[in-house]
Image (cartoon, rainbow, N blue to C red; front, side, top):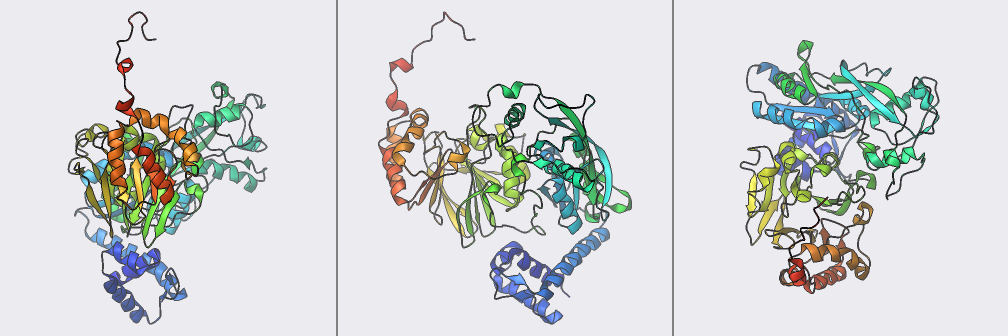
Length: 602
């Protein structure tokens, strides 16, 4: 029996398509078909239901699929044991809670890659119940999880406690608490806001222990907003708006302890890599240790402190995040709106996705931003990924459907912080190259650790350039001085979407940004202040409009605010831009006067 035939069959089952499976394995479709047919001939039964769309295994095929995965894992372990002392190769699949993936993994993964360049590290971020399920099913090798006191790990997993983590429960001042604190059971009678998955797991243990089940209510938004809502005694979802001074009130607190534990199913092939990661990880709060019997384990050393509720907006979809199978490209269709993704286009293996709600505007301190992912034939490009405020949530949202490590490109329209300040973290998390104007390429390293951009920046010439992605070609379209010199937009000829950067931007809420403009005349009032200030002048606007009329555009999607959909709406927008007076057109001598010296700035 040829293990490559098994690998081919598994890829087809997981992809649901011969074409996508062939792309993952870097095979021709006929070559992949021959491998699957060879396995079927050897076993003597049909393994695929070829009439189903998408392809799915027969009953016998499902059994072969499950057994085949075990065979491939066992083969990997056998090869690794036989090659002890040789260079470490293969894949290490780590599962961690979201707060660790955001705060503590960059440096350990960098050092791991430096020491073992042929080792592929895949990180899955999910709350603890989902990680436990994945560890039991073999979808990940090791995981760091948080378990509440009194909740035992599954018997099938090897566990070791690494530390203790204290969560602070925040409540309104008017609620009566026992003077010496309260247990989770005592608090079950009160309505709870959205909590991280591991705390939901803890609260869900109440019925099993014969206590009253708590009433869990979703509550999204920033920490300050949630605390403000709790301080006011609000029981319903906190609406967008100013929270007043309530967020500054002190609230009673009681501690709820939890344990940080690690689990493993025996990843022998990466024992040396784990030993190296331990030294790097401890400095960042992650302990990766080798256990007795040669098992490689990953765990988190959890520091005492407040639980920031970082996963409130992820509740309900992070559990069970599926990592890509065996190092091949992986993509799944986005599901409901709770994934924070809006599907702009999805047909024929080509998908364009919009993320508009990754940043909560907090009293005007943060500008809403849109991020975009284009996937074609298993290849991905991320457009204008944003800054550090968007990185964690964007990484987690993308990870469910496309492996960030396998991004081909990060496309930057220019070099503003809200466009590309997170570039250093994306260079760590992926093998992508950064495409940016040659004007800004020299400034990009200021966002990164020294040497991280070396060999990974592709400069876009002033005239623009084609960008090959999978089976399609994107265009970097010049939009200089709108609003930045060395500025580009990105055009997708398949979806006919122009990702226009700051042109067309409006300062709106995240909810409004996820919509489509229906009344153009009314919407100009939201665009005008931004464009008058940030665009350079009418000449640049007119030249851009002349160029844009030569493109077949169905959608114009800016980096801030809602999009413009349909030929008529797009034409209205282009005409508006061509007549816009802005920037230099509005300057007078009044803009260039010396300030008085009589009053110093506060």
